Image (cartoon, rainbow, N blue to C red; front, top):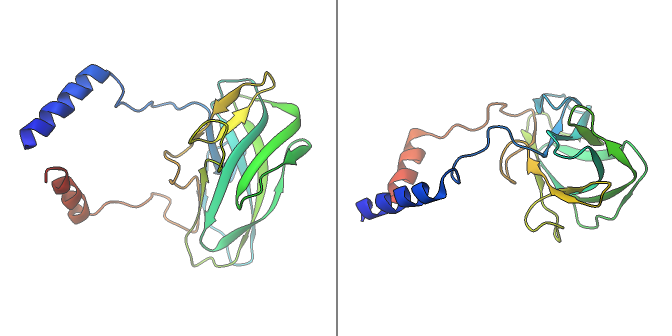
Length: 195
């Protein structure tokens, strides 16, 4: 059985070419950062602090953004208490965390980036690791993913800046390196593949 699984995996890789390879430079990345340059998504703050963060679309394939749809999920010792945009907007998101935003004028990309929103987070408990993730909305324009709209009316898929939809795109008072798998857990998971 083990050999058959290995043979099937090798055949699938041979026929798929680069399907299993992950792009080293992602396009249309969306993340939450401490800076508008989209370079720092992890930091610390004290109890009672108001932290300013930026929702940035980077490495864009288009030259402007006319709106976006995401679900921002926060967890831990902080809460979203304010949000502003670079231009006038209509936000029709009705479910918790959903932002379905249309700009009155397109926001041009500068060096392949657009700051789509500025967030204010209130730190209620600095002793707790806090995270924000970006997920798709309940009824997304593109199934399963967040997206943005261009002035030409094209809807473009956005990719979470740190990987998958449940990976944190913003970390406050947490481990900036991320969790490291233990040998026991990793070995048990590996063994389960061959059972």
